[in-house]
Image 1 (spheres, rainbow, N blue to C red):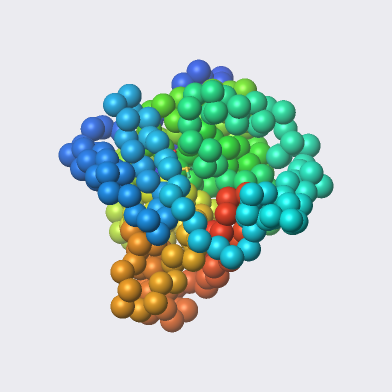
Image 2: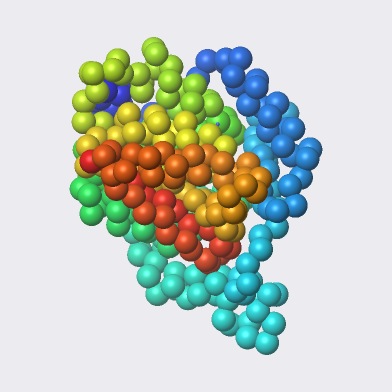
Length: 318
Ligand SMILES: C[S@@+](CC[C@H](N)C(=O)[O-])C[C@H]1O[C@@H](n2cnc3c(N)ncnc32)[C@H](O)[C@@H]1O
């Protein structure tokens, strides 16, 4: 993966100058139109089992809506009835009150960034403070130097990675919506991040597969690649992201997929219709099963909390 390294080296030197804009704009592509159309279509046909719906607005922003979650443990105050203190969301609040690190989840600039994202009307679908700090722990534990993120939103999770990386590190993040990317950019400047994230704007698959783009690498010429890849975008494309992430991750690196459980929808019985937000992950799990340990070692962890019943999958590349 020679090209991304060259980009990163150039990016690092630019970083010192703190450029006002480091947004790499993807070329418009027919697939981008197809993506937009499919987004709208999904939102027109709500799925009662509970799906994150994406609607592409005329101004280029993306609206997300979570429809329903089934779970028999209390997630919110309303569900908890007589014991409103015993909720998954309440436990998350307790954990964050104890564990939020002054330079990470409690960084005032990070909190300002969330407020900025709210004001700009971005959906509240960033990782939780606990998952953010988990990603920071992971980044430090594997001594990562290079991180790739798919799905930037307002840059909340990106900031945890950037904070956990060494100053010589590199972080690339890909975001479909120019509006989200703009808010993320403002947040990165406010956070004074170093390394400063490079935001690549456009449909992630187009950017990752662009033969002339920063992630291109002819087969056989892939060098060590990324230490951590974090996938947190449109769930239907997760398998395609997995293929690209495997290509771009170094041996000994990890790939983390957020939203791997989807309120249990990942485990619909054989023969039942698989909800659209679980098909990608199921394809990944089928691939891992067939691979029988030759390429990866992986685990998927269920979580409850502020973000209801979901979880993440982590894949270690042999
Ligand atoms: C769940 S949010 C990311 C949250 C972010 N990782 C965080 O925790 O702060 C998903 C983001 O992915 C973006 N997205 C959705 N589909 C995409 C695609 N095909 N290519 C690039 N970005 C996409 C959405 O616009 C949204 O901003």
